[in-house]
Amino acid sequence: MRYLTAGESHGKYLAGILEGFPAGVRVTKQYIAAQLKRRRQAPGRSARQAIETDSFEVVSGIQKEITTGAPITVLIKNIKVFNELPFSSVPRPGHADLAGMLKYDTLNAALIRERASARETAARVALGSFALRLNELLGVCINSRIVSLGGLNEITAQSAAVELKRARAAGDTLGGVFEITAENLPAGLGNFNQWDAKLTSRMAAALMSVNGVKGFELGGGFKLATLSGLAAAKTPELSGGLDGGVTNGRALVMRCAIKPVPGLKAGTPSINLKTFKNTEAVSKTSDTTAVFAAAVIAEHAAALTLAGALLEKFGGDTFEEIKQRVKLWRLKTGKKLAYGCAVSMPMAVRRPAKR
Ligand code: EPS
Image (cartoon, rainbow, N blue to C red):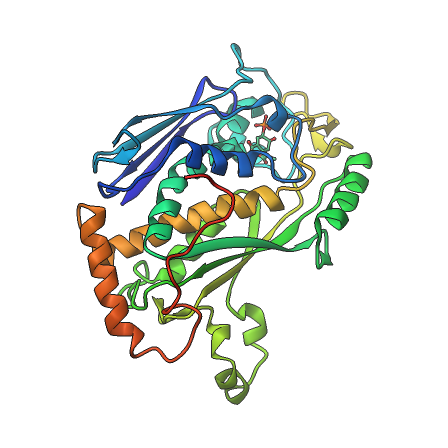
């Protein structure tokens, strides 16, 4: 299975193509819309999200809401469209602006922002909805939670709202940490034979590709490095569900650190690359925090990678074939696994989305 996205932040459409997805998976329009809404309406979003509706069309690979096995194409319509690209020779420090201007040899940062913008992740969530659904139907439950916001732990809806209001009023932004879990994964996904076959490196790549992510931890992560072998042996769940890059039957637990959005309403010192005069880069479209939206995006990025790993092991053209193989495998490995919520869990039911 592989996927690609295309489209600019203020172009007419965002597009995504998912190839190698099996036939026979029911994915409703409401289900995809609910996932896009979770991304769009996450706390801490900018005014841009109030403008966008993420109205979309699945233009191939599906008939009457059931996948056909052909490549799936999703088109998402942008509401805020630039008929003519603006010009700005002032890069926003911390964004892709300067690196992209150097790379593509342009004085126009707007050209770079258009594709580097996190708007692209709407297309990934649309494609990821298919993968999330496949995981669910095979009993794999992928979830996220916010671990910290702006250095504060134990975040509730109320405490987050207070922090975000304070940051917004100051023209400031906040980073944070989110956790992604995948429960009830069959043991034996991924492979230790090659570096790029390890599910560890594939999950890290998937999650670190989410805009703004600067840190990745699997299971105990950096804490594990402080334990002795004897202590670590008593807490095997700190391996995070992967040993040798292969799922071991425990829940997969990953954490990502996301930086504060660097584009500030309060402005950041920059330079006009046309005049070489010092100036302020002021960002009006930045989120106050990306951590809540990133957690949703990361669920979908994780789902795409895990769907790929499931298809590798249990491959097949139709959902029925895959389902039977997963069932047999669970019966076989379940007897050998003495632990975990996992193996005996019934088909996972996922929270908010209507099917
Ligand atoms: C985003 C769209 C962006 C930003 C934000 C998230 O809109 P624009 O492209 O107009 O700036 O609101 O993106 C970033 C903070 C970023 O770093 O790219 C979205 O749809 O997720």
